[in-house]
Image 1 (cartoon, rainbow, N blue to C red):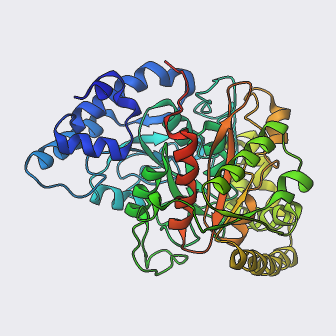
Image 2 (cartoon, helix red, strand yellow; image 1 turned 90 degrees about the vertical axis):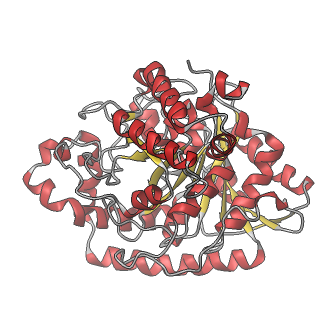
Length: 469
């Protein structure tokens, strides 16, 4: 092993691990073993794993290692470990959705995204904590404890892909799969200081993923670096005729533009979100200004962009998400309400009180909002805006957690389906991550990732880790 791998193999990203495998300075078995040791040391304090599948991961690592030695490498993720949010099926493991209702719900087959990862040679480490059914959390009345923020375990890691982001930030795996219906990839990415991408609606299959909202659900990649996020997206993107929402698009190499910089790109800054609609914490506002100035110094052209108010986006997302979630959960909520945790039950029950007219009106307004965002993206190549309006609050302060959930600018891009990425924009005075969000044109994740990489390269966010363990 190299000195760096010997000292801290748990901080190796997917790209670096693949290079080490090729150079024979690290093996998949050594990496998986190091990550299992890391989990034993730090996970008891942050509750990332619902199910750590150690023996299966080691066996997969042994197979991957033998294939590498024989010269049969399936691609850049061959032998690379990945964590899976526990609403996504992994054959032979329970998909519990962090709920007592599904404790014995053993998946008969891999979700489409997991099957793609296995085909690429990736190694599944286990199932990760989430909010109950991707909506009810952080909750303390469930069969498993909520994940905690590795930057400060007394604080919230965001949700609902909480275990994925916390595990990445803590060095438990280099890649993870999350889902995003109202911000559930980007919220924990913001809180934990990692990179989380909600792809264009339809780019990544949702077959084998427990639904929350049929027309707002997205599955996407999470990683510690922009390059690794692009690699993971390469592996999981593609048309799936068995997912009714899947889109048939040409294959794209999402990392192709990463190092081109931003010179000549038009960055549309959506200031109204964090200045007028929902005034952000001063540290967040300052961080967003720094990101914009940095990209301008790198050669981007900044343009102010106007979009509808955040409150309008939030209302449309709330009506659609709640109505569709009620359609999913109504039979259980009528027959087995006591088996839900309090937060999930309360949030899901809200959908029972919307009428058909409310849902139709929200879908009509959604079309108008799509038109408005599309118009903005004719004037700009990528939009820059807030993700979270403040650093993560304490996880045991229920009132603060409840206040923090609506204080975000992520829901607009679930409503419109445009790709959106959240990542670290700096650290607060209290040592917690601050965040920025980039959004782009449909199926133009490559340009979103390009802008994110330009910021990452200057700011060095890819080398900033919590001092945990």
